[in-house]
Amino acid sequence: MNRMRILAGVLAATLSTGIARAEDAAWWDKSWTSRQKLNFDTSDLGGDAGESTVLVRLYDGNFQFALARENGSDIRIVAADGKTVLPHQIESYDNLLNEAYLWVKIPAVKGGAKEPFTIYYGNQDPAMPAANKASDAWAEDLAAVFHFAERGGSPAGSTANANKSSSPAATAEGSLIGSGLRLLGAAPVSIDNSPALPAACACWERLLCRSTTPPPS
Image (cartoon, rainbow, N blue to C red):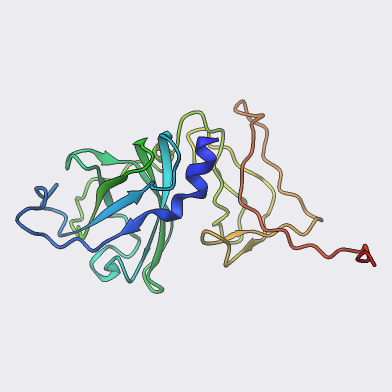
């Protein structure tokens, strides 16, 4: 239940432009030239949720895309201690439309609080160390996480279990978070057999139904 509540409330995360001041925490790494403060606001969360992966949306009102690499590969997210790099996955990154969706693993989400952390970016050094693996952003007990962000391909899972589907998927723009999956009742999407299955499933969905039953008189 807590995991579902965190996912449902993830859009409460707020971003504010980070302007370096004397009272700010020390710079994490001078190879990164820009940073912004971020607060994950859990004011509406009834209790603690422990380790959780939360969504962060970047857009031109809270992030300077022109200063980051064109694919966002230089983004690093640092915890409030100014030292711990939080695992993250970039679901989508568009530096032309100035919009990106990132999933960030928070070690301990506390209810009724504002948890600060900082986004660092602006490293153009060819020798820049690689970021964490996408699967590091997700809990080990998750059988699969599907974003349905593929274009013309089959859905691929993001967790270490590497679950995937061999079924072609019809993606659709304009879903709740980036792109989504359009199911019209004719071609199902099946998950390939795996030792990590079976598993419970949770998702966002919007039902578009045309009723054949006349309304009551």
